Amino acid sequence: MKRQGRLVRWEAERGFGFIRSPDGSADVFVHLRDFSDRQLKPQVGMDLSFEEIHVGGKGPRAVAVQATSAGASRPPPSPAPINSSRRPASRATPRRASASESPALWGVLFILAYGVLLGAAVWSGRLSPVALGVVPALSLLTFCAYALDKNAAQTGRWRTKENTLHLFALTGGWPGAWAAQRVLRHKSSKRSFLTVYRVTVAVHCAAVLAWVFWLAGASPALWR
Image (cartoon, rainbow, N blue to C red; front, side, top):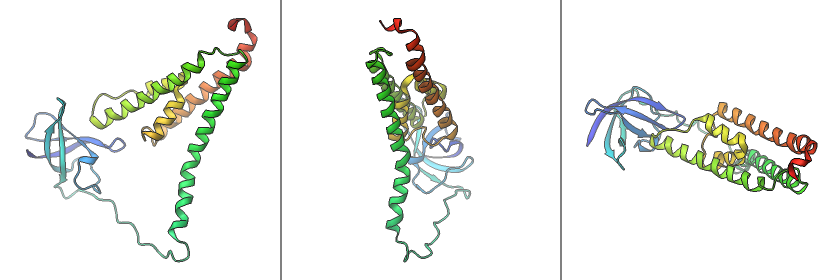
């Protein structure tokens, strides 16, 4: 059924919001991909027309959404290229790709170094062999927590608290969190979240180093 309504909430970072229609009793969930015009920038207060559907016993959802207000905005057109005869575009592409791959490469190297540290600590008897099973399990659990949170964000369900995700990383699941941020593209652009995440990684690694090189060496009887 075709309905009219107004966008009363929009989460730009998560790509979803809610439409309030005078014909309905509940706000209607809408996702960015449900807009017919993919170039449209949704804004609170925008008048919209949409088709209302119900899927899987959940609340109403809007599809085939179109803007009907004059305030609908689209991104400005890209400026025309000045002159690319001296510098072909094909040369600039590898530079951008290498710049984006550099942080991922450093992350992989850091995780490998962390794994070598754990292996050496177990081999020397300063760390229990159980750690070689616990750490991958924590990373898998953290990756699943990210995946569930992203799905909840897309479907408008209850979200996982950011402090819970940070706790998973702090206890040893930070490699799984790193993988989820890149594979799932979730929590990978919010600077405040990434800052706290890096702090949890630093604190966890510092605690492991302190245990391996000082505490375990001072109390070898704990591992015999």
